[in-house]
Length: 550
Image 1 (tube, helix red, strand yellow):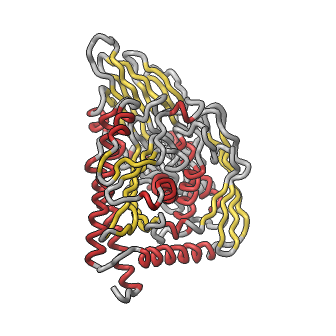
Image 2 (cartoon, rainbow, N blue to C red):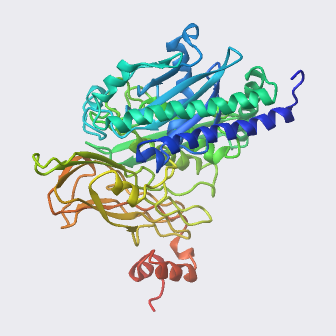
Image 3 (cartoon, rainbow, N blue to C red):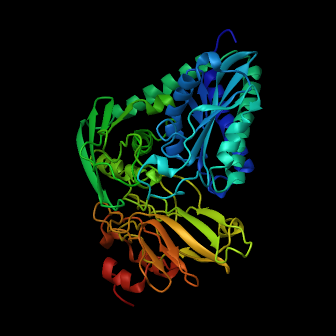
């Protein structure tokens, strides 16, 4: 095309969104593990040949996609431009060069048109196992947490590296699922590559550079303009959460100066000796997400819209963990970062941001081993994602059993029971767990799980909001705290590997979101509707809302 207008570029930009959505859909349809095909714990995106993210699929998590936005440049540097060929596929799960922990595999595929490199398709997915101690927070360094695959070629000129496949298969507990998911990542990139090439041929586009500059420059300017609308100043916030071996306090100073915004986590708790630490790439990913949700939600997510947000944290604090710190469950604190950010933004954007929510997923990694080793029954590993309630919004109640900020879906009971010998006896909304307020916090869940006959259940807990529930905002009350129990009432720890005796069930009480506004401002009709729906009890209505008993 000799002359391309901004309207032409806008049409192509919209088309790229369809390309990466098809890429993500291909991954979901071909994935082996339930965390990908059921929960959507993935990301997919298109990058120009400089490694700048041009478009991302809506399906996926901010932690994956915003971290992946940095990762592709690492791939280009490590592989070397002179060593990039048509038919290549690259991968890594390095926490500091990828998305923050070993369980995420990032696959990057260069795409060519008429023999010339035009860009890259990249995708990330959480795999069910990566060896080591298994998915959990108990390791003392990253070497204990599993197999670390450096940035390398999964395939060169279409030929898969078979020794790499053998190494992976011999170091993970679920080789078919893990290797299958890696092939799925490569396949989804291939699907995106084909659609991108079709688009470029249709528009007679020989390269992506002009389109990429348009997307990134437009998004960058739009985001800077949104920042400039904020009231200048310094806004602070801090939040204490459970941590592992000790509570963790995350402190934030948000500096707004014209169209410049700096989020500084100076004063945050030091590194933990256990695997709740967060690499800086993941801290940036979720801090930028929280900022962008409140400040520039209409601007598409790409390198340009992320660049204006400056995020720093002292090296050696729990939100900037250096190698070889243990980082396996970096999501637990990472998912709480937007709550910290939004708490600071509330002071310059009043009546805009929600109350705190459960936020961190209540992931549970279960290992099912036969009670009798001579029985011939196979062992199994089951990963299940569950969500508590979100914080209430200024004009709306919080969402119940909804993953924010991660955005993943809850795995169905049927899909979970299909991949391992467990029975989920109960999965229901947890009455009374939403914080009271003019707008009520979202409800958590109660989930009850038992190993099937002939099996023993060991699980890795990676839960938060047990000792430090979600706080309300502007007079709203805190949400219900989480609990980890056995069905006989025995209390269990919120983090770490634990065993459920035969005949006993694991019972999880997921936390609720905080309320927004004074509870006395909620209408009597809304309170009675909550009672009728089973969201709150009659006693709670009287005690927290002041409703006259019937």
